[in-house]
Image (cartoon, rainbow over all chains, first blue to last red; front, top):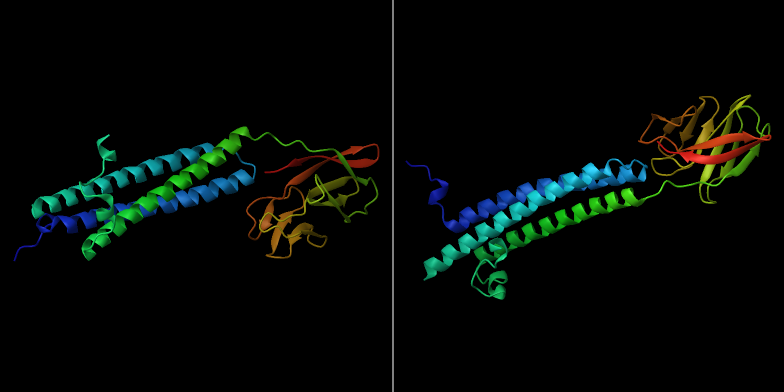
Length: 89
Length: 168
């Protein structure tokens, strides 16, 4: 009995798995960003202004990672569509 | 800009409103990913807004205001006043013969009014049992995470004058 690998799966299924993985990572980063924003706001309202810069930098980095994951999702999506179109021809 | 190009030769309406169920699921996940990334951008903008406000906010200057005469309050006594505006309630406590302390009366947890407990020599919030030190306004117990803002007092010509507010 051979265990099916990811290569054996149809491209659409592989694409969905990749997108689900990327989505999970984005969701985790988003939760951290929400926490970071609330902590920075709390600190700002308490009169502590020195936390704003590191919070903005880390939030920006997390957004860049999210954007990178979105580009990855977009690329996977394009590849799956092209493979579908090729098969239909 | 290869990564900004549309992903398929199909028209947009065909991509976004697919007839097949499997494709629809695919589109939904992609749209959710877009939405999550947009929300992430919103969080980043929020942090940038806080940064800009922090950079351009000036240190507030407070007016000088007479709050009580020396000897007006007995030892262990309390006087309530407003400072710096009429909406900002404060509490003045005479802790000893020659010592007065004053704090904002607004609890740093959920803004209930704190009162002075002479038996325990501390400021107490009746809403959620937050206790503050009478010496420096620091949190002794309870849900508040920040100390009470301290009103800086000066003694001038037999009067106590509020000159500044010190936050932690």
